[in-house]
Length: 138
Image 1 (tube, helix red, strand yellow):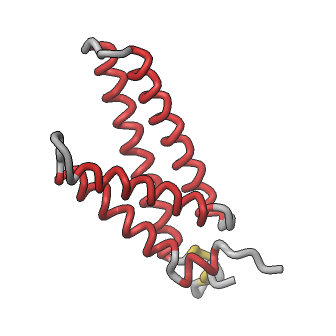
Image 2 (cartoon, helix red, strand yellow):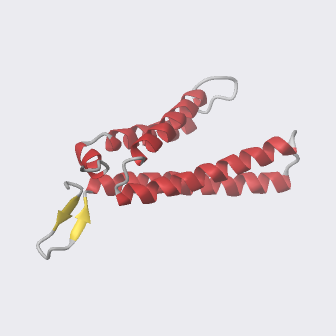
Image 3 (cartoon, one colour):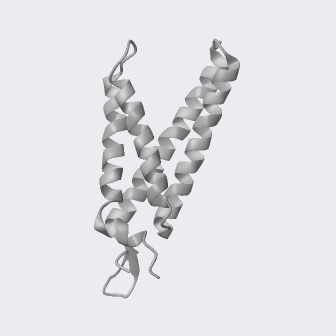
């Protein structure tokens, strides 16, 4: 497979694009973990309009963080299903980013922080080395 490159010592290493996609996925996961911490602190310190909604948002954020960690690990393993999972996550992130650019509570700065990594992840995902690394040979 093209996903594994050997150096002069015969030690195999993953293609840099595969590693970059995994690092980007783990970085998105880490930022979600930070968001979970923020949401938990806000749940304790502030009085939400709806505790049920606040807890649900925190739980959904935690599920998303775990899912991104699973995707990141499996990108490094070269499992083919990560392509679909990564596309879904990045498209959802792009949708949230677009929402950040408009409306009464627009935050273009957050929109760009969400949009740029999502586009980079999609570009990496469809690069030939990553496609080769995540394709099963029959």
